Image (cartoon, rainbow, N blue to C red; front, side, top):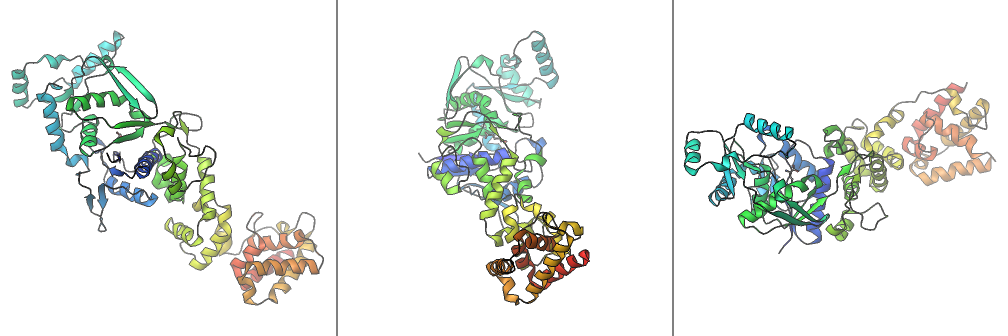
Length: 487
Ligand code: GLU
């Protein structure tokens, strides 16, 4: 049978970094096995609908480069469509299907109608808590006769449909966690259809995973407690079971559970700060899996080739933002400058700066950058003459007079060069080093004041790079300004 995985988020309006790992592992498992990945939107909780959430989800998956084979897609004009033969892929468009399946369970005695009000259920729960009993539905409505149920439904009385959990125990095999057995007496008679006629997650997920031909259910550990209910449903329907794999929890460095708040964990926000998609994917891939155990940087291709569900860790994975920044920096260093500037402009950094000038800036800054948005802080020194104290121009083994002498020397040297000299970083370096040698000077005495004159900062890219970025006229202007400060 062909492998088919799925990613079925509830459209909350943003993609959680943990969900990025889930969809990536589903993608990797499908790729590794020449299978397919399905995107399905689980929007049956009408209270939690967010406008535009599906569109934004699709855009984010596209931005990180995760391609799925079936599911909703966004057309150029911004409207939703879909690809694949097993649609619709949006659950709110599948209500008839759930209704038929719920009816089948009712007809075959695997489910029953329940009229109990919220107040009554709260009361039952309270009493059970007082008696220190497990809190479960007390099956009052299971005793109702068929006639009475029909009558009350006919009269329009609000009701839900509940799964009748059979006696016995339920055992299943999880690819990550091994064999799990649970006594059915611990399982509540799960609501399958709500009073508004919408299915609950549990009914919809089982029906859809079956009808869409899903062979592997790979998702976060928080769903593992739902599996026994799902297995009982699979058995009631007579559906074959998929393979289950539950991924380890993602934790903060203090091992608390990772926040659900958008500001801390939204993939969109990471992209908006200039994290590169490939760095994000590489980073989340390692939250629970490492192909070789020690290396940190892997291409998507390498991950696709080496991914194994059986190698996924059981223990919680720590989401270490510092490591993510480091990894992003590694990717920035290797990434083509033109593409980096493209992204930087998209996130609103240096929009007003001429593209060629910006590319030069990026070229000399990218080795020091961890997140592209931080380039913003460096830009002022490139676009306007820097302000600083004259003392900053003094190399630690020298004084103001020496700084002045060296900068005057540099000014005459640079004034004598052709424009072409400033176009070539190795020419600049060789030229200035030659000058220092010929005059038997020390590097620090010349290069320190030169670098500060150009950047106005204690820390910056080196003087050769800065001369290349600024060119002849601007460089000499900056040196003159420094000389003014010194006189
Ligand atoms: N809709 C669920 C979610 O929001 C999907 C859980 C599952 O993968 O079964 O994550």
